[in-house]
Length: 338
Image (cartoon, rainbow, N blue to C red; front, side, top):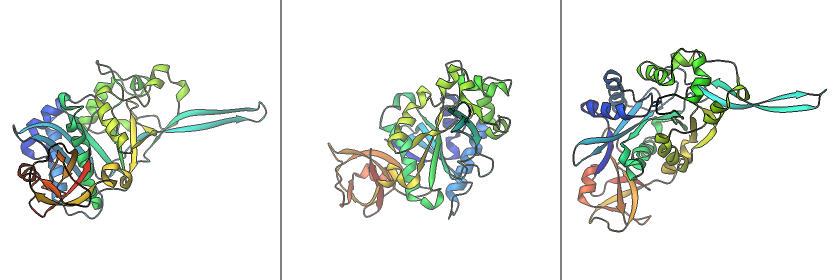
C-alpha cells in the first residue's frame, strides 16, 4: 500500500535517491544531502509549529510503500513564496506600438521580470518513480497535499502557484536559457539549475535583464520553447490543469516552463473534497477510487483506495486502510474522487 506522510530525518538517504533521478530544473529537490537535510528539518519544524497565517513554513511529504518501507515519491508545499527572498517570474505582456502618422498599430509580445506571485503558496519538489508516473500513485503524490491544504487553510495563501519544468534535451541544454540567460552567465542550463538547487535562485535572477524582453527578437527555437513542458513533468502539468490551474500568464525565468496559478478555494481537490465519518467494515469491491486523508497535522496520512461511498453517508473503510490512515471508528476523513 502506498501512503503519503510527512518526511522525517530518517528518510534522508531515500529522499536523496529520489532527488538524484529527478529531472534537471527541479531545483527544490537538489541531489545534495546537506540541502535535503535542511529541507526535511524545516518541514519538521513547520509541521510542529502553531500557525494562524501563512508565513515561511514549508511542508515536505514522502510517498512510502508500506510493504517494503521504500520511498517511491515526494512532493512539497511552501506556505508563502518570496517570504525570505524575492520570487521572480517572467510575465507575459503585450506592448502596443502606434504611429498616428503612418497609421500603424502593432501589438508586440514581451516578457517582463516581476515578482507578482510573491505571497502565494507554492507547490514544489514533485517526484514519483518512473514506473508509477501514469498510475494513481501520481495522483496521490500530487493531489494529497491539496487535501492537506484543505484541512489546514489557515496555513496557506488564498492562491497557489507551481512552476513546471520547461523543455531541455538529454544533454541538459535548454533552448530558452541559451537564448536569454546564457547571455548573462557563462554557464549552461544544467549548471545554472544545479547552482540554484545548492544555493538560491535569487542570486541568478537578480542578474537577469530587468528591462522587458521583446519576444520577436528571440530566435525561433527559444520562442517555441516558451511554455513547453519537460516530458517528465507532463504528468504533473496534466493533473494540475485538471485541478483547475491556469497557465499563459507567467513563465519560468530560466527554462521558460509554464507557471500555473489557481485560487485556493477553486482547486478541485479542495472545493470538491468532503469530510465524512468513518465506519470500520469490509473492503470495498468494484467501487470508485478515492483519495482519502486523515486531516491531521504531524500525523497526516493519505492514500488511494476503492470505496462504495454514497454522499451523505459515513465512509466504510476496511481495518488495514483505517490503520494506514491512523483513524478508527467514528473518526473523520477527507476524501475526493480520483
